[in-house]
Image (cartoon, rainbow, N blue to C red; front, top):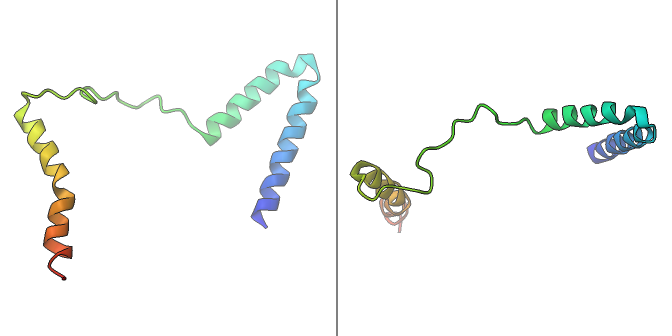
Amino acid sequence: MQTKTKNAVMLGAGAAALWMAMKPENKAKLTEMATQVKEKIMPSKTNVVPVQKAGNPDPLDVEDNKMVSEGAMYGVNYYNENLQEQR
C-alpha cells in the first residue's frame, strides 16, 4: 500500500516539475525547489570536522599503533573468549 502512495507522490512531483520546466520563467523556481527537496532528503554535512590522520598513519606513533592493533584483535579475542568456550 505504501509503495502505491510513494509512486503516486513521485509521479505527481515529476509531473509538476515537467509542467514548471516548460515555462522559461519558472526555470529558476524549479531549480531552487529541486535544491530544497534534495536538501531535505539528503542534508549536506557542512559541519563535519575533517579527519587529520585518515589513511596516513605515522609508523612512529606508538600509542596510535597500539590502539589500532587492539582494535584489530577485538574480533579474535571475542571469538576466543565467548564462542570457542561453548564448544
